[in-house]
Image (cartoon, rainbow, N blue to C red):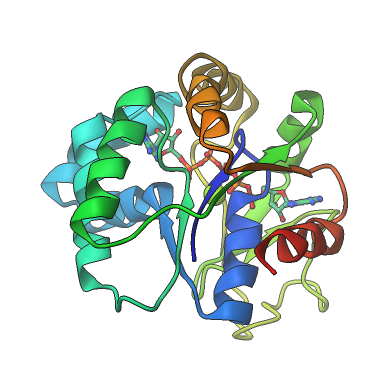
Length: 214
Ligand code: AP5
Ligand code: MG
């Protein structure tokens, strides 16, 4: 099974991907996570991408598509892929078709997380993650069971993303509306788009996604 999780910043793509990885052994291909790792490691790609990401704008189609190509090449044929935050432009959608063919895969579903943009700013500014294992949390919607301690690995170190401030979030949303949302009709024409209410609780969104994948 190969799926795209589509939705604006804060829609819950990363949260739902993590759950699908755990439950079904799929692989999450998050270009955002890959880019943040490159920034941290100060690779040439990371150095180039940092300012663009901090501004909430999109990194070049070539850079992100190369990252996906490299990841797909390392995957076992029977491991499903969850594309999280990719493709994000019409050009990337086209490149992805070629990459899937190259790696002997096909797309099963494009799952759109439908959300109310006004609520997203609150979601994003409340987001933090474990500095050790990356588990995602939210100040009010999804805090660790024991305050200050990661549920998964027990670490007490947490971090917030530099692009998770209100101004940058607004730019990220504009980028989504202008460049990413327009790729949906192409997938719709293929009959593979499924919509999920992303404003429901994390558990309810997970159940709705499960019902699609069954
Ligand atoms: P990326 O990392 O992909 O960020 P994004 O698309 O802006 O999405 P987010 O990660 O912010 O949100 P999410 O949908 O994963 O939500 P999450 O599950 O964390 O991209 C970052 C940057 O990298 C881009 O701006 C761009 O510069 C660059 N980039 C990346 N990919 C690119 C590409 N393909 N092309 C070009 N540039 C690219 O949830 C958010 C919060 O809400 C969490 O705290 C969570 O706990 C909480 N939450 C989740 N679900 C729920 C729920 N149902 N109810 C209540 N709270 C919830
Ligand atoms: Mg994410």
